[in-house]
Length: 429
Ligand SMILES: N[C@@H](CCSC[C@H]1O[C@@H](n2cnc3c(=O)[nH]cnc32)[C@H](O)[C@@H]1O)C(=O)O
Ligand SMILES: [Zn+2]
Image 1 (cartoon, protein in one colour):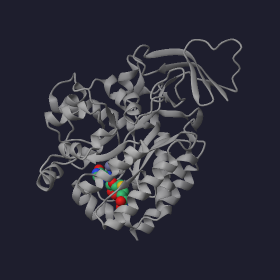
Image 2 (cartoon, rainbow, N blue to C red):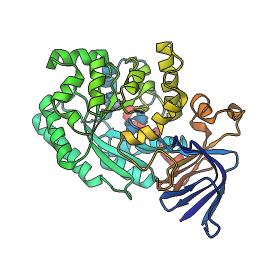
Image 3 (tube, rainbow, N blue to C red):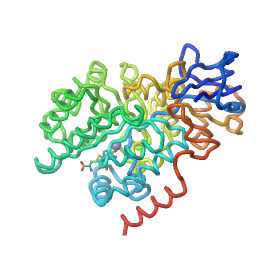
């Protein structure tokens, strides 16, 4: 299948050539040309007008729990531990596979419509989520999150499930699905159990993804229980000897930042969720200065409460200026990199996150003929400071169009919305 986008404007995220214009050519799952004219003998199966649109790489959401969209607005304005233990976990314990399926699909519908083409998902019933991803055409890094506050037998069963899932689904769905291993957090997994994940991660040659240092309380408890702050604790357990992606990493000392940089640990910054749960504000400028790869995640719709990556990009650009009184920290292009190319790099995907010949055709189109996009002074600035997920008109993943003029091509949105609402009614009943 050959697709030609004609007369488009391209924001490549390749800093050597940030913008291009003219034709963008896609052959099967890959971009083969960005800008200029198509070769004369190049025949397209489909030609699309790019007029009035900006094309850019699809957004990469590096942390979330898709099935939790069923709990959107269910328990707001609470601190993390209360929210988790008294509200989320009891509801999640009631989840059936049907709930996981429709919660996940609801999130996927929202993400496709909002320009996200790749997402990281930590949850259980991961086979159900993988099937939804496969069906939707999206790209995802899936991981069976494991809470180890249970008997040794249950711990082993969960670890085994995580390992089997990771092994079976890595590289599936035409390579659109990859996997990781996830002890949920240092406060929900005992040290010896975390070490078993490290071993499994080595055996399978897969990365580790975990929550870390989201709240001050968690850090203090870690010191009490294990005599070390979370970074030192995970370092001792061997977690950072493996490729590792941390969600949150809000509360860090200078020394901890140096360790993360030294071990090339990646951080998924979730500003919306951190604000809503009053967890604090991550030290992103310092992390970036130290050379840590920082990407962006929404976390779940139960703590956000949407999956709009444009919001996270804007928050990343605004928040750190506000708290440092320095308008030069996290400039617009840096924030946009965090939501695209740095996101892809953070999850070990080297063929997405930018528009370049040879890269995967994960592309979104944005309507730049709206009042809030005029004049076309600086489109990076507009995407970061003015756009929202509602400006996305078209989406391709792996060369396949998943959103066409704001309509989904692979999923039945109306049915999914209806089923998801019914699932919540039953859970809440
Ligand atoms: N139910 C599984 C674990 C699922 S992993 C995903 C878990 O992450 C939890 N979660 C969602 N958001 C956050 C967050 O911000 N911090 C910590 N945990 C979270 C969520 O409630 C869910 O239980 C088991 O029994 O082992
Ligand atoms: Zn989370």
